[in-house]
Length: 157
Ligand SMILES: [Zn+2]
Ligand SMILES: [Zn+2]
Image (tube, rainbow, N blue to C red; front, side):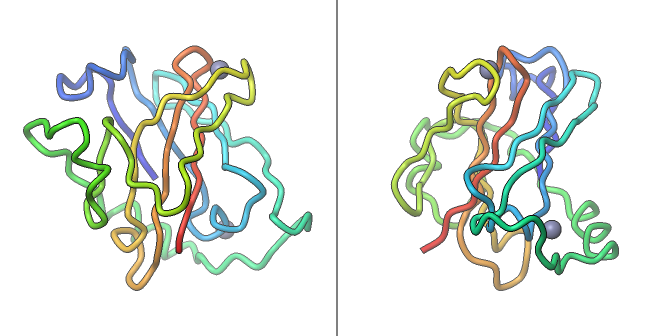
């Protein structure tokens, strides 16, 4: 969903001397018990953690085809050239933001790191209709700067 290079001057506030990768299935992430998690390495590596479905099931039909993934990876987001105010993202329903505060669709839900248990740092929000035509809701991404773990959760009305 997101690849950020902490060495970019605009992303220095992340405190990462390398690349953060947040990866999940854009279809299945909306049907999980809790957030999807992955671990990243600063050289661009990523390890996806297994997750459970909301109904306890093992598997579900995934409607994302390989060609859809390919189309998604070619449709990159572009990081703005200048910074925006801290609460800019919390007032936006149609803009993807990195840093600052989120515009939670439901109640705020900060995630505890599955490794160290500390509250994760809010990282970004991705409006779901900027990923898929006609999709609803928002993906919220957090990360643990100590464990290099990312969480992704989807909310919609
Ligand atoms: Zn899927
Ligand atoms: Zn942690």
